[in-house]
Length: 475
Image 1 (cartoon, helix red, strand yellow):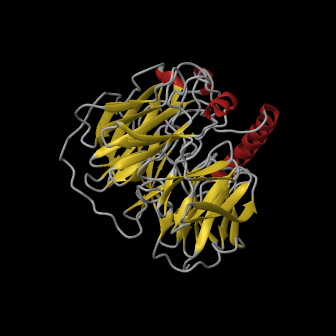
Image 2 (cartoon, helix red, strand yellow):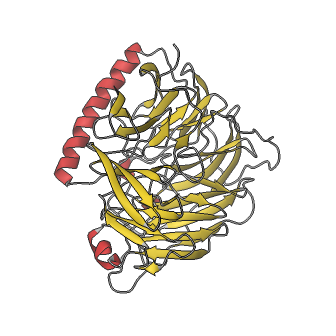
């Protein structure tokens, strides 16, 4: 399933109603008390391609930059060189024109955030003041979708910054269910690239672009799953487009008749010259159809290796697949977990096909992306954050666990592991060795699978209303 929620429909409805009521109250309060104002967004005509290849200069990364989901292309979530953790204090909270589901980026001292209203913002990382904003069109209201639980549906996947071109890339879902890749100048928000990026099969409006964008060898990689509820005709897909906006679009489509969504919020992880991808459940429960898998895709999007649990058929039938997580490298192995709660270690040189893991262990239902430090991972399980150590010969060892209502994807920095409980809106900084809470703060309502960003003595989190920043550095 590609959905944003888990659990019974009744509980989900009650939580949604409560969150909506709280969101209205907080939005009203913010409107009265915040010093931030949002100017009318600048409209950009919808087109297929407005690229100026080579017109922008490269902008090398700075030490405090956070240019992609979990900071690096491998999705480790680790930020070295930060000042030691001190008491958390509120820095600022800026209300934008919609919910920020993607992880905020930091580029050149500015926070880049994209909203479900199809607007991309650059916000001063120190003050929270809006530097520029670019509105891309009208998002899709929930009433116009065949199913789903984000209203409206605009930009959901985390953007990516390309230092070679100085562009921030994002995928916007626009009125009618159309999907467009945009490349914006990180300095002033100017529109440089805009191109249709529809999956080659199915109905465009049935696709949701939740997975973080990835960058490899001058191409942007875009993964697609379906809407919450797995309705209508979609098939898990990865596309790649040149950062110039021109040329052919490469694609990989999961060889199933329907579903097989590639929707995990962390998107593809880059491992050398290839991508690691998690695939959700497909239609088949008889003949293996390429779903419920970990894939190795080369830069041209050819499948070069795969792993699927021996229980793939039962997992497909029960919506208990591997598509809820991004696979990551840890030590000499590839690590993966998913909705069924079984963690796997794979030989990176030979994933092993069906049932070919080199180790496995019952760990807990996992959603999102682990943070990685050496041979230790911090895994976002449905009921809490789980420390895991991997040893060689291949073995998985569970360590401490912090119980949470719903653990977002963790990150590591300033001597702490950071995690958002998106069930309660709380942010925690934890001792990496013991799991003891070092600092905590209340954020208010946040999107499902929220993950923090660390930069320059601050932590940034996307919320249902914009971006909130806290600091542990000097006032």
